[in-house]
Image (cartoon, rainbow, N blue to C red; front, side, top):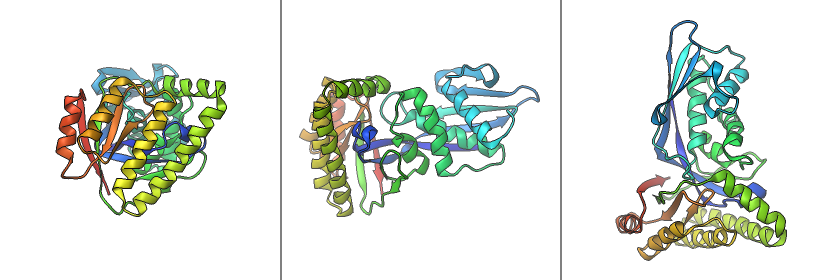
Length: 307
């Protein structure tokens, strides 16, 4: 039994989404996590193999906060099934701690593979809810946007605590994703914003409100197929993320390089403090922007097209 799940990027709405504002996220279908279940000797239990990390962990002896083991236990509890004698192997194209949803992709792919091996199919809602519980181990107080867009594998408008709204995009959305080479410390970034908000609530609430307004305008731009307007809104969103303290000199260099090379818009994506930036590009302009990003120090540049 095999399953896979994509990565994700946030177009607009990082951090403010934690405080009830909307965000728009899209799947990155070209970068995926893959999970495979295979039977094992009777009595051996479930072995969890993170192949890319060269880690092998028996479920019965795994720590409670081991993310993959926690996910497996949640699935077994949800299905009311005993631990199978099997090997669950994970491979992923997604870089870890890069703002691309690698943790949620592992959880969704693994949950579906394990459930399928046991003769069950998980709905998007259930796969997302199970992955969200594991996201708490990774990030402390996650918004839930990663597990949502990855489980549905569709562009979504997300508001914390509400059912996700699938967003129909009628024009190809071409994004370049540039890896800064520095991991994003999501838990620390989210906690830092929370602490600074508690010290200066008026400043942060004003910026979160402006981010929410930008998201609503970005949705309108997508519906009107106005990509230049969407690019300008992405730039404005990035400026607000700079103001709340989650950018870095390397991220700023990549954003500026993308804009100078002709990107319609560019911003950090995810928690910031490392990780990736995204650049909205045209098909004709993509090669020049990709080259500029590499020249500016991006260690990887990927392209994804959402329709």
